[in-house]
Image (tube, rainbow, N blue to C red; front, side):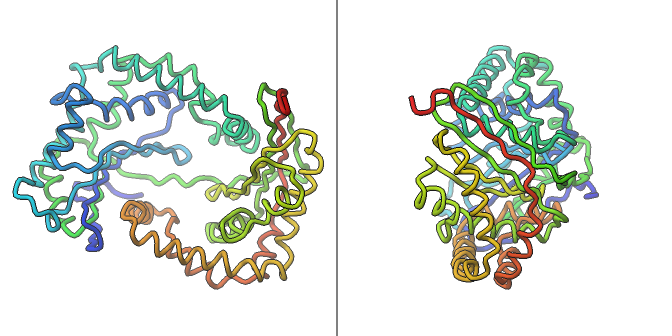
Length: 419
């Protein structure tokens, strides 16, 4: 458990000319509120009590020297994480006598604490507009074969806990249940009346943290964080499940899901190497076999479910090539057990990770995210990952791949494929 505190968490950093601020609120994830969370992301960023139009708020952000501001939310198992974030110039690096960082902090807190709303509700017009945009967003994505099939795969691979299926795309009817009063009540209970965990990064982080602490209302309720770690999904038997359906798409798509036996947090790094060996700038085993050598696919790729211990392989294919594509995907996985092939490719993949670390040193947002995740107890640090992977040998990858268990083959045939 991470105990609540009014004291900000300070990450001193002199490498950038900006100050990054993140205020984190956590509360139990509840399906009935998933639409409210998405709508809040729009409502809180478009208007405030002091600046009741989008244009007015945009101008106010510029006039108060706010380089970026917004919300971000994610779910880890049973806990919703909701972030209010902002990026400001570091006063040490901005030669402007009009820049008063205390004034900027007060402006940000006023914007967060006084949304454009009535005493006990948001405005119906704003909520209705946000609901319609959310419906269009859901509809547009579900018309995309890659997105739709991915949602279906997540339902199938997590048939035991169900938490991977808890998203608005599976429950679009919840959007209509939101109204201006219910969403305000949700906002007030979980965000407005709560004191956030505050993170600040920059060369002036201590001073900015002090200003935030002084200007946030003192009567807000402190909330402890119980970090909720995502569950590894375990294959229960030796059966390879298959699922096929047909929809009105002009392409067809196939997904392979491998669950990884005895997966642990250290395997995060090995899974990253495998996905890079299969599908990256440095190694493209999957694309070489499926596309270059056999011309079976439009596109193909590999991705890891790092928190859940799974590998996903996807390929948009010509439907007449389905059986051969299945055979060749298995052939690509088999190549991961060939130490001669691995030895040649592994060096390139590891070198690429080293280059990515150097790039990340210029990305203050990525560094800030890593530091927050480290504080919360989540493994998400590229430098730590590199220290592990630079020692990995071909035999290690071969041993890791031996833990792969093919769990699901999903095939969606587009009935307009080829027309």
